[in-house]
Image 1: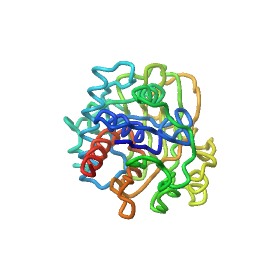
Image 2 (image 1 turned 90 degrees about the horizontal axis):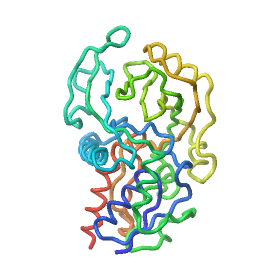
Image 3 (image 1 turned 30 degrees about the horizontal axis):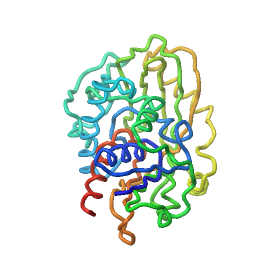
Length: 317
């Protein structure tokens, strides 16, 4: 079966790789690839962050955890590694807990000794994983702007356009959620430990180490509809850097006693937020399978969602 996947972020590429592994002839078409995608800006650590519906997200996240962990063990070029994670959370049983294979409640050594959920999770480096996925494809990615899903060739069209779904699926439930990160030299930060704090009214903070840098974040700020519309239509991919937000992120790193090195870059991405991921066949055109609305959990859910996409395609044959 000839299948066209629209979108070359982590969700689109993962769906394409899974569909190809299932025996289909797959082509990816996208207006942006690589460093120009929202996926390239992501901190890219496994965590089901602000995604729904909860039951499906837990299932997709468990499957993605398993698949990414396998990549960490078997495909060093994919840029996936396992980290110890400390998720500071005052909830005695957060909704995402059952998505984690093994987790324990601990008192941390961080300033103030806050309690946290400790678990092991895969972390990807987008600059390595996205090219690795692309290299698995039998056909090169076609760089083109899709105007209408109905015009896309193929026996099946898998729609993974992220924020572009506002336009392509005429779905105003997709919103732009800006995320800003600081990329710094790792300094004295433990490269095997990721820390996240999203408690109560505190601004979101996380520190996620990579091989030779650390990602400090972050934010989850819904932008105005006109900003999201501009990005969905192919305009500016993200809002400009907020210097005050950068200062707050660096101050939070200091508050946690994290001694990083020089700041190398500040980057902003516009996540495709939606109250619930839409993974379903189009009611009006059964040739189209939608898979979008992953918000800040694209890397966390991509493999589990891709498995469901393969299943939907299989049931149509």
